[in-house]
Amino acid sequence: MIAMSTMLATLGQETNPWMAAAARFDEAAEKLKLDDGMRKILKSPAREITVNIPVLLDDGRFEVFTGYRVQHSIARGPGKGGIRFAPDVTLDEVRALASWMTWKCAVVNIPFGGAKGGVICQPNMLSDMELERITRRYTSEIIEFLGPERDVPAPDVNTNERTMAWIMDTYSMHVRRTTTAVVTGKPMALGGSLGRPEATGRGCMIVTREALKKLALNRSSPRVVIQGFGNVGGMAAKLMSKIGFQIICIIEYDGALYNPNGIDIEALAKHRGETGSINNFPGAAPIDKNEALFLECEVLLPAATENVIHSGNADRLHCKILCEGANGPTTPEADAILAEKGIFVIPDILANAGGVTVSYFEWVQDRQGFFWNEALVNKRLEEIMVNSFEAVVDYAEKHGVHNRTAAYMLALDRVASCIRLRGIYA
Image (cartoon, rainbow, N blue to C red; front, side):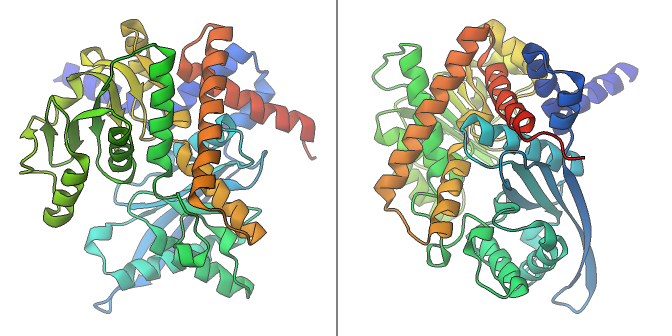
């Protein structure tokens, strides 16, 4: 019994997102030989906001929901990061995600800092009107910290372009002018950007393609296993299949599908749209979702939740490339195992940075009042993702470290350089 308790406690520490972010930070800071003062500045969130939101429910009762907004760093520009609605939102999770946004923006060298937000609720148990009330009251509670040059939210888990429209409208009503650049991921009619829905999946596709070139894996149809068939995983699957990748397995929360000859992604998307699930799709066989991660493949793309790959299962992976479409899908303890196995990791702060990159494009277009066609959006995304991939890989080779450590070192170095140039106001 004691052994089981110890094991569970150890796993709990391993999967704590804030501790995972801190472990990666500490390793990179040590390699960079950052002094203690700079480490404290880079590690500490600039601001943490907790709000309790009273909301009138449809049945006439009042409920109080807790919301968070963490601004980790604004050294390189306004805070940038999504807002999620979920029952398991914690301050530690939001802190970790905010810090990852700081490093992600720095890795792709866009002028944002890192932020993240969340509200503890069960969206599937709430009506549209209740969700709107929560969103607007949450926005009004943190409004003094938001703005195009302060902090720019975006969609995340269980939020979408409609949520962003509510935030934009609430902010605009308070400041008495329409301010489209206060959020990204908006509807096109309200200043959204072409190419934004596909951006994260497209970024994953681009860096995976570059990794295959780097490793000289010349298989004509690289085999890909994707966990998650939402916006990131589904779009990555669609775009990868279009350039000849063979998507042999799709894993979802309620099941998994396998076809060694490749799954027809367009047909699967249609099936899921009609039935609400990937299950019972005639073009692939069901497979145990817990075992599907360990299929032999060239590319494994976890695009769902955190901590999917950990010390208890990392040694069972049979991929050549791990492209982290989700935030934090791999624990620090698993990194050493993956390195020993020789798996080429494209870390999350690089792999899924396509979304924040096109969010940056949207913010720029809103501020200009001049909008780009989709071809230009995709061209500029391609340039940034390819250049960032090359920068991380070159940094890894130069310093003799693995890709994740290289990405963190590059990001910390860029943020620290800005802080040194600005100095500390006292």
